Length: 440
Image 1 (cartoon, rainbow, N blue to C red):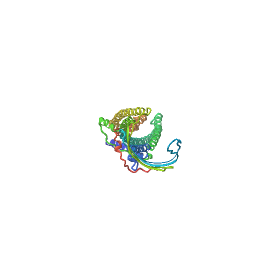
Image 2: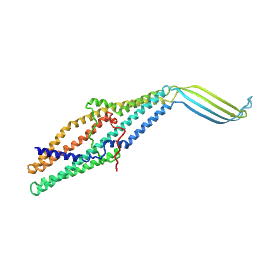
Image 3: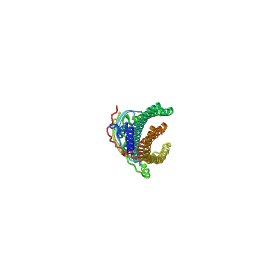
Image 4: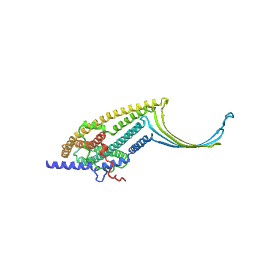
């Protein structure tokens, strides 16, 4: 019994090392380095950052739109005057004029339009800032997904190669048995078919890995030559209600709420388009006229000007209707996002819970399959088990080992998906990263 335990431990250790060989290189790329590369590489993230800068500039525009306006106006003119002969004091002749005037206008009352315009621009800036956070969180999640996918495909390929090696060894042993008449040609044919299937599985695993590596390069801009296995994952609450309550912090949902706020402010602003404006205005100037009677004058004026729009051919009504529709659309977007986030969080939580509950079951299944394979191989050697029994036992072990690899990587992805849906993914990934791995 002690001998059996030692053999089992040795077999399990060799299998574990072979599965993780490609993904556990010491000098490989870590997840943090992959995140650094993707956040620098993602073009959509840069577009979102530029949109934030654009909204910031628009806010400055809104603040300065109703400020003091100062203009210097100069004029040169020529005038010819003709008067009837019946005029007692005729003034006909040619006149050249020149004038220079300094004009200053300042709105002292805009019916609240200036404040609403600034508030709407602030809301738009906040919306774009959270849109950037949403895009950044999406980039982080996509990086985790392609990173774990490559690790999964690398481990599966290593497992397929190990299985093929075992099958080829079985083929060699089966050929020897067939030569001495211990097994039939049908038994040998079964082994040959299994080896051919193993070779096909290796080819398929290599192709699948190549696709995942191409996706990794598309997301990060670097090749996935050696990736370090993820040994730690972030902590996550086990309370579903707590998780669902935190989905309200998702940046896309906060963005939608700021967009609704901006739409409401724009609606209020549009309703005041035809409201009056009071301007403080002043003029200071000098005018000269050259004619047969020269003249020169200086003028100064300070006053208050009231502007009341009276008619715009229905433009304001159309603007109000459009602004009201924008508010309705923003409300509907918020409701749709809340339902979608709630549903996705519940689904992801259920999938994560299922994987974690299956951990022990898979571990026990692997242990049982390894024991079954060990005994089946011994019974096959003494002739009490057929080649089909041996191949079937090996396939069962391969299936549960593959499922374990898939579950381990899927658990990581589901944890990061929940963190994204809770709006906490950006807080976990700092803006400062380790140096990027050099890629040839």
